[in-house]
Structure formats: C-alpha cells, structure tokens
Image (cartoon, rainbow, N blue to C red; front, side, top):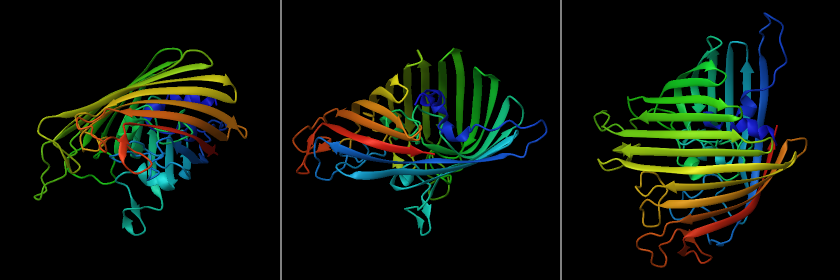
Length: 394
C-alpha cells in the first residue's frame, strides 16, 4: 500500500489520482492515437456502535455525525465507482460514475434519476476534460471534484475509511472551468470560475472564484493553499440575488518523513453571511473551522497503521453539524486504522476504531445529548465505533 503515500500528495486536488493518471505505454513521436482506461472500486463495511443505538445509526442528533459509514450493527454496501478515461498528448477526458447507497450522498444537488430528482440510480461524480494548451498550461472544463481539503470521496485513496468532519462539511464538487499553470514540477497555480457549490445547476446569476497554490519546498514535502469565494443565496421572487457571502480558506500539507513514516495536516476556516442555498443566517457572518492531523506507518509492504486526530468547530451554526437542540456544536474525533493489502494490491482491508466526543449543550438535561442509547434516548455525548471495511479496486 505504499502507492497510497504518493496518492496522498494530490489529495487537495479532490480527485482520485490512481484512476486519472494511468500508466501508459510510450508512443512513437507523432503517434497520438490516444488511450482508453477503465478503473473503479467497490467497498463495503461492518461497524459496531458501542452505544448500541436503537436506530442502528451513527448519525447522531442532527443526522450529520458521519459522511458515508452511517449504519451500525449490519453489513453495509458503500460506493461502487466506474471511471472511464481517454488520454492523448494534448487532452484528457474523464467520466467518473458512482452507484450504490453512498452515490447520492457524495453528489448533493446532482440527484437526477429516471423519475426525476430525489434518488438517482447513477450519479455523476466527475465529468470533465483537460486541454493541455502548453507544457505548462492546462485548462479544465466540466464537473470536477473540489480542490479543497485533504480527504476525497474515493475509499482506496484515503488511509482512514471513515471520513473527517472537515470533509463532511464540504464542498464536494464544482461545475465550471479552471486553468492550472505549472511554474515547475515544484510549484503551480490554479484559478477558476464555477457555479454555486455542490449543485448541477446554478441557483443564481453569480459565479464563484476558486484557487489553489501548490509548492514543494523540499523533497517529500507538499503544500497546498486552497480557497473559494461565492454568493450562495437563492434568488428571490423577482429573480434577484440577495447579498450574501460564502468563503473557505484551506491548508493541506503532506510530508514523507521516511520510506515508512508519513505525516499530513489539514486546516480550514469558513465563513457564511446571509442565505446559503435556502439556509438563512443572520446579517452577521458566522464561521466554522477545524484542524486534522494524519499519520501512518508502513509496518511491512502489506500492513500499515494510521491515526487521525480532528477538532471541528461549528459553534456558530454555519454548517449542518448541530446538537439535539438545533444549535451549532464542536467535536473532537480520533480514529485508528489498520491497512492490510491482499490480492496483489487489489484488496484493501481496513479495521478501524473511531471515537467522537461532542460538546455538551447548555441544556444538558437527560435526553438532550448527541447520541442515542439502546432505548432510543439521547443520553450519550460521545460514540465509539469498531469495525472493518473491505475495498476492492481494479
């Protein structure tokens, strides 16, 4: 699983590098017929929740405590991905489709199935093309995974199976156009214009601006500074866009300390003022933010151990991570994950333990805490899940 270390250096791009950058056979000069690739994965998991919640749910009071691993006490299917790529010397095309219970969860605002919105049989995770205008300048147009954050939707790329709260609070994808200029193999700049966040169709006439600066200060050390600013307000009855602002500033960095030992860090600060896609905030800006520290160690070529610590603060209530009283909250999370590789690297088995500890609300009377007990009462401020994920990639 040491290939995963190389993949982590591109996590801030928000795409699955293992499938988008296939190894191709050398072509003779002038021979640019292109190459098709087909790849993907399937994952499933089993988690035991030590609170034994009556609903067998890991989601907590607000229904947002977990991204994908939502069910407890049962075997669950996660995500099925199929990715088709076509590449030439001057262009790439990627069609990235997902199926299964987690497909809709990772494609908010893009749920158009045979019977209309509200439950798709297939979800478009990504669909875009790259035009390599020069050796240094590349243009991308379409729907692409967000550049913001450390973790991605693709289970084979992340070291931990469960996803962080920083990931879970978005953004997830964008529809628009961007340009990336590589000053060298150690520095690049991306700038782009996109529709509103996490939606197939724009909800107003405003456009968002995205950016990323990448630099590699030393061998094995990669640093990404990411950002987005946008007006996410829904239009009013006259078609006008109210004044509103949404912004995220994100730092992601990875450092391969040695052949076996890896460190990563993700820190983000977000702010919202006014309406956000129908969620109305006060005129005063509200904010959220967090930090996550990652580490993993390769015990052998087929076995590794990793840990993630995260603090996420949504006490201002700008995101959907809330307590039972409907107010914003904060959480400390720690996750320990094993990584076992089998079947010539195609099968990943990930045993995992995760503990989430939430701040108690001001009215912390019995029944107002974050998580259910075995009788369905909300008497727990923390939860511990223990289980295993199985991922097969091809």
